Structure formats: structure tokens, C-alpha cells
Image 1 (cartoon, rainbow, N blue to C red):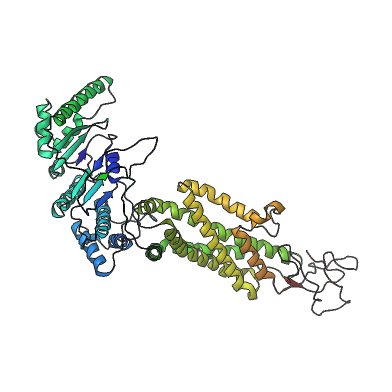
Image 2 (image 1 turned 180 degrees about the vertical axis):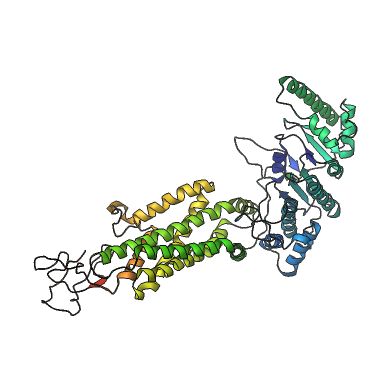
Length: 569
């Protein structure tokens, strides 16, 4: 085990050993480490995160499958690893937590720590081609596996690591934070680091107390030996006089150990090294192909979404409620008068804005919650970002489209939208929502946090609305931005719904209550005037031309105008 005060470099040491130490500011990591032929190296980080709506067994199985295990070999590796880490009793319990999805109750903190170790074991066992999740001869690096656990759970984790080291003949290097006496006794060797990142002792655990006693710092009776060692290399920053005294003691202990190393009396076995540190990580990473990655990640995304039933039912209820509210506010749309056009256009515009905003807001939260898990898995080489994004989109987008269509199903009959065009309207509404969901995932992936994503998302959607305003309700798109406007998600959905609603729709443009006006063609009428009293269909050239319709496209038929009628263009 590796002991030392906070900030002494314990995690940096493990990063360097694993070859994942970040190179920044010109800093370099030197040295070499020796591994047996074919041995695997696994690194379990302190802040391991999981998808909350997966069970422990599903989590371990997915890691093994992404490493190429299939069939009986996969099941043996999964079950063997779960058994070794004491997770068989909770194997079918949701992992829970607030990462990788909504906050969910699940396994305990100690079980989460052991699950993170199990995932690394099955991953490296798959790379080594071992059966039953074996990890023989490998190196397991574990960063503070006992942090945040009570003394009993922490001791269980340390016990499992010690058992693993002996049974699998593996080298386990773990940084421990204030271990209890029983946990410290399970460690074969200990490295004690000072606050300056230097070594004050490295050797057998049973020799540590005697070494410091010989240096003039014996361990008090009935005192935790691990706590005594950490106290010796810690500095009390609150008292300047005591801090100076502590620094002198630490310097003395460092020199004592350096002299012992120089004399060759440190007990450290040295042999030729073959693996260079700081090489950028593991040389070879085993993983399946992109299609297999996509299939496995698609299954995970589907299970995550399916088990989030409460949120999905809440969203469905909200869609029905909003559709009802739209029906009550807009009411039955008229078929007579100029408001027959303006009210329909306004309703379609509001439907588009509402559906796109709701879909995007849900997606903005989707990726930031999973970012920590996905980054760790991608960094470990389990899969590439593209299969994850496509699988996530394939699950989220249809759900968003279905909920938006449900919103339209409720609103359309209440508002009296054209029955013949409702199917096309719902299809346009659903496709636009799927596009908004994809835009939300993109913004969420680009944003560094949920807060930033929620700040940037509405800005992106407002821009999409302004560029997609084909009816000029808010503003007209400048000619210089016409090409950029084609990228608007709202634009195409709005055009589809407008065409679906107005194509073949017959409207009576006679103002309500009649209108006194001079005889002659009404403003905006395109085509010859019919004779007085004519009640037949309008001439072929008499059509309502909307600004979003292509030239020559028939969009809506109008009742024949009279001297008192007027057409809104």
C-alpha cells in the first residue's frame, strides 16, 4: 500500500505507473517498470462512475463484451469476477448513483468500489485471454479504494484486494487513506510518501514501525501504526512554529531513508526493467469492431431509457397536458376571414417552437450526466465516441419524436387542424423534434458542464427559430444568411407542417359580418375575377400564395372573392 498526507502525490504515482500521467507545463516522467511476460496492468481510479440504471452484472458483462468476450467465456469471466469480489448477492441490483443517468438508489459505496475493481479485472483478463476472470501475474493499481467508506466496508475492500493478490499471484498497489489497524495489517509492503513527494520508507509492513523506532520515533502503545506513520510525515500548517518543526523532522526521515538506500539495506529487490513509464498508456488495447460496439452500446442506451419509466411517463403526461392547453387557448380555428390563415400559421409556429424546445432541453441534460462515465470508458479504450453518440441518438430521438407526436395528436383535433394533413403534420413535428434532440446532444457534448449546456442550448434554439422563420412572424432572414438558414432545425419542420395544413385547404376569405367596399378585384387576388354570384370552384390561377411556398406551388384554395371579400397574401 502507499501511504502519505493529502497532496503528497499518491495519485500522481499511480498515474505514472499506469502511463496515464498528463504531460503539461513541460513536465516529464522518467523511470521504468518491469512486468512479467504477458502480464496485464489494470488501473482503478478513485472516482469510478457507472451508468445508474444498469445492474452490477450488466455493467461487468458489458465491459467483457466490449473487450471481445462472447458466449460461455464471457459468462464464466463475469460470474467468476463477481464471485471473487463478493458481488454475487447484489449482482442483479441497479448500480444507482447520480452519474450516467438520473439519480437512483442502488448498491452500497463499498460494493461500488468492488464493482470498479471487478470491471478492471474482467477487462484485463479478456485482454490476456484468461478464463473465469483470472488476473494471474498482473499488476492492479487502485487509487484510494477505501475513501468515503466506513471502517468495516473499507476493511472488506482491502481484504478482497489482499485475497486477490494471493490467489491470482498479482501485484496490487493501492493508495490508502487512514486505514484501520486490521486493514494495514493485510498489506505486505508499504511505501510512505512525504508531503514533498519523496519517500520516507519503502519495505515490508512489519518492518516499518521498527525502522522509525530506530530513527527515534517509536509508535506509542495501543496506537494505529498506519496513523503513526502518516503523522510523522504530515505538517501542521495552522501553527508556524510547529510547521517548522514538522519540516525538520520530515527532512531528517528522508535523509535516513536515503542513507539506507545508498547502503543497499532497504530490502528492495531490483532487476532489469523492460517497460518505460510515461509511454502514453498501454501499448495494445483489445476491443471489438465499430458495429459490435454500436450494438452493445445501443442495448445499454435502450435499457437505461426503458428503466427510466417515471421520467418518460412524466414527459408523456406533460405532452398530453400541453396539447390540451393549446387546444383550450387557440380553440377551434376558423375557416372564414383573414384570421383563418393568421391563426393557423401562429398555431403551427407555436407547435414547432414548443416541441423543439422540450426535446432539446431533455437532450441537453442527457450527455453531461454521462460524460464522466463515457470519458473514462473511452479513455480505457472500450469504444470510440461515434458508436456511443449514434446509439444514444437512435434511442433518444425516436422517443422525443413520439412524445412530440403525442402532443400533436391531442392538440390537432382540439384546434381543428385539417384532418387530411394531420398525419403529415405529426410526422413533421416528430422529425423536427428528433433533429432538436440531436442538436441538444451536440451542444451537451460540446459544453463542459450541465450549467454551460443549459446556457448555450436556448441560444442555439432561438437562433434556429429566427433562421427558420419562413413566415416572417419575428423577422425576415437577411439574404446573406439564407444559406445558413437551411441548417435550422425549426425551418424544415415548420415548412412541413405549413404545407401539410394548407395544401388543399379551402378557406372563405370573406370578412366576418361582411364588408362594405368598392367593387373590383380584392387586394392580393391572383387570377381573373369570377362573374357576380359565381359559386363554383376558384379558377386554377386563383390561389393563396404564402411566402414560404415555392413559386407556382398550390397551397390553399380560396372561396371565390366578391366585391366585398379580401384575400390575405
